[in-house]
Length: 478
Image 1 (cartoon, rainbow, N blue to C red):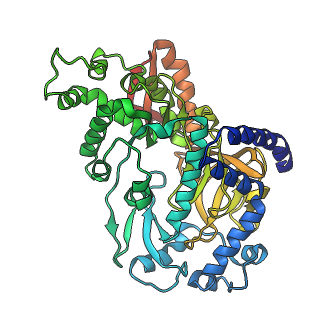
Image 2: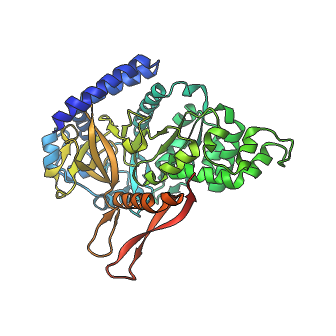
Image 3: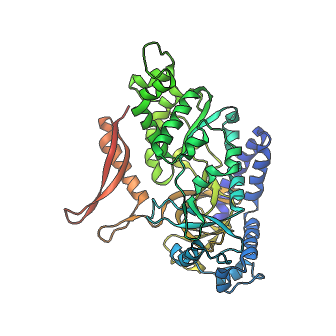
């Protein structure tokens, strides 16, 4: 089945890449060539990456306990000796590092900080070890994503991005290591500052007061509205919140931009657009040169797609990259595809990837290598990283949608650990999303209304119990 996917979908991807190469300009040409090289030699690249990881971390305590030494860098030995691991399995090792143990526990390279997972999906904040060269790997993949978007949306480099980016507070572990979200670390990095092309000043992004940060970023975006070519945030929910913030605070923002008071002599269209009360297409009316929105709209963020389409007037919604606290996974090589069609091509040079078929036992013998996944099947992703995560279950469920050259393309389906259950049922977030969409189509849209966002609650007043979507925000459809 995998071979069939490569021959059909892969052929289309290769011809698409030819047209991209023809339209690209330096330095994007070199990045696109690198993408083609990596995706054409997936298995060989993965074999090299695993050998590099095992070679550099062979003297670490974790791999030593698994029975590996510096000469054991082949796949067969790795598969036979290293077990599949959850965060609970690694927690004692992580805790020792966090408490100040500087011996080579997970990695022979020093752990310089921890990335904290969001904790929004599975509840617990996890500490992911980071080594010095990890940021360099992520920067390379970020530049590849930028090059792909530059070809599909030419001219972005001539203007600025209005991105609502928010740093979170950092903490110190008992051993003195910094623990912070991956994105906060990125915003503080020298690479981010060098590549900076946004309307928001760094001080506004790094401000830990979310309300003050939002106000400052929106104000700067309005002042530079004719320079803005793309509007975005990391996740769709954050961009929706930003537009609602503009709805509630536009008058004060306009007053700050002008003389401190909105009066009849103010004729700037950006000050008057918000006072009309019509928020259809407000993004392109306030920022008229905007070419696209940049936000993640996969998984649970899909609920915000209709709202963003309403506010943007139908601008393309770009979900360009798939990454997590553990590692960088892949790129969307068709950034202008519809939001429901987003698939990410795994880049084989970032980590060693294996996949556990959904429904099969969590056993090392059941893991499938990146180059051997099957089109149409769902898998839980398992990673081995340079920082010392070995056969680690990330918890994301992905579905293979095709191939770019020999590299599989995946659609994000759901988080493995996020389930609703009252009786013996197990309802995941994807099923909840589909149920809400069906209910909205049947009950709300005929009445001129639509759901802006939702959550769920358990109803146990009746037997059997069931789940009911709670709708904190709804709106009349345009």
